[in-house]
Image (tube, rainbow, N blue to C red):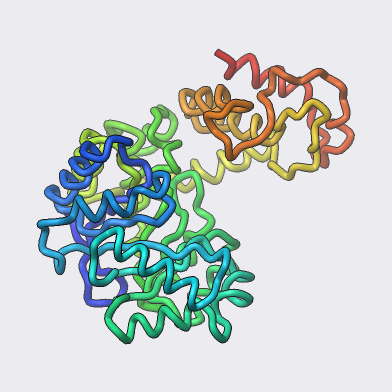
Length: 369
């Protein structure tokens, strides 16, 4: 396993981090998966109170029992819905109890944006007030945040100086935070990336993506991890690993002393930029076509079509398409393309003047099993 400086915190973290959000449902098997990762050198493990139907913290706590505590860096998070110092204390104490820990290495303000930071966190009697006190008491070693907002907002959060590390989205499909990761490094922050394998999207094969590296790679996840780890500002790339086989493959990738050469990285970046342009030609995802009278989720269907035709992630696209309108993916509302009744209400609303009905037919033909 390769190890990297976690900002200027005097900590070395494994290039591969364990994201405990896609564990096997069987707890004993989940514990085996986590312990295999630790045995292969993974020392940064990330969880949250609500992962795995609120069982992830407990499972992680059981898995790390028996390992030297000082050699592992454990991260969990505070959900900010009812933000206050007292609420943060309650969640933090519950996390400690579930994981059976005396302290947490990295405590994240979970999934924040600039509005949440200014209106809920950085206020009198707010969560940051408790976090600072807990840090003074040694219960929290480092205050962190995970993030969902614009790169401009991320820049401002970094510049507050309140946080010592951050966990942000970054992968070969989504490079929006690329420059801000450089900025965080300049500020001495540790950077963990989430969605390193595209939130599971890059766990599926794509000859287009794999072919971007000279000599090829064994799998799309290998290419995905190597790309993320080639960014000089990334300290650890989190991956939600649900099996021992996934752990072993990712650990082998993160153990490489070399990742991607500057020339290979430029080739991947050029491919990304060109593919992003092609995807926008098909649909920018603006959502002006919605709502559909028959509840077809037009932007989501076209997003899956782009994964298929632009990125070559056909297997993933078909799986997601099949889940539309079912309880397999309750977070995504609306129906698949083949439910279009060709009423025509969407097309006049489209600022790109796309032939939406024809493209929905094309999407259904390509992705419907």
